[in-house]
Length: 196
Image (cartoon, rainbow, N blue to C red):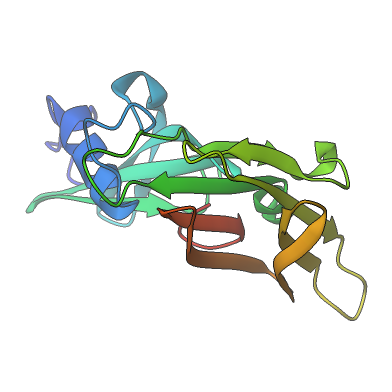
């Protein structure tokens, strides 16, 4: 690293980093559920060859995630990282602990529904009920069985209505489901991926 290179992050970089993360995760900056400035916590820096990489921790579906600013003599780059400045990595199974459901309005007149962040281990067998403004009620349910020596985790997501399964998906590693329910666009996520 160049001894003349500053060891502190570029001035005002947190705002730029937050805008980058909003784009990365498809969040609107005015969305109250989007990452906020207070969600970014500076946790240190480390050298990487001729560059100095600064790290900010932020909450995510997997527990911890890191955003980075890599500073070189030519400027800086924004990115995300799977590990923190000390090499700490989040538990890969932590992404399987939270079922995330986002509801998108299909018109300006529709009432907004807050996103769900459901802890899988706390879901009852009847799922988590959501009553839509139309009066329609649907429940979301998920199960995760840990990986074995030979196989990855077993992930199952279900959408229930009146005790009947409307939709079910079962796989390993994770699920992303995009569908329409009660006139809303629903995005359901569980497991590893850029959404975690």
